[in-house]
Amino acid sequence: MKVSREQMAENRLRILDSASRLFREQGFEAVTIADVMKDAGLTHGGFYGHFRSKDDLIARALERTLGTSTGTNFDLGVYIDSYLSRQHRDNPGRGCPTAGLAAETRHQAADVRAAMTEGISAQIERMSRELEGLSDGGSRQAAIGCWTSMIGAVILSRAIDDPELSNEVLEQTRGWISTAINRIPDSREESSPVEPLNS
Image (cartoon, rainbow, N blue to C red; front, side, top):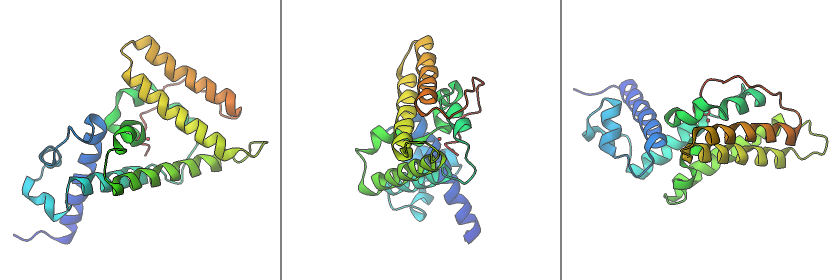
């Protein structure tokens, strides 16, 4: 029975969503095509009707996930609170693909690195626009410093097996960013997980 174009498109999105979550949870190498197709509820044989290879899947999944993280509705203070939260730290499969996968991306194919680069560039631009009011005009510098600090804090907080220190890394990074750019409101309430930025 022939599958309609609409069903093919829906199946492709299911594969991409499953792949994106599994990659963020387990890493690129630990996840197989069979794992992705099973998670998506589809047969292994259908994979090559959508993607040329696992590398192609990785690149397309990153494009989709990073693309959904750069929407128009964006409040920097809320975003930072959500990003540097325990919920985000504890839910990598629904969290920021940059924090979850950037270190692994450097070992991937060129189109995978290009997808990550495009996503990071878009995020820096988005944060720079939010920081345009800085008196010294250093909005891009502040955006890059803020973003890289956030990513590093999440990576380290996930690696640490001491809960108190892990929480402290998130909290102190949030405080440091607030002080450094002197414009983000201080919110101590735990926010919902970054989704995935959509982090």
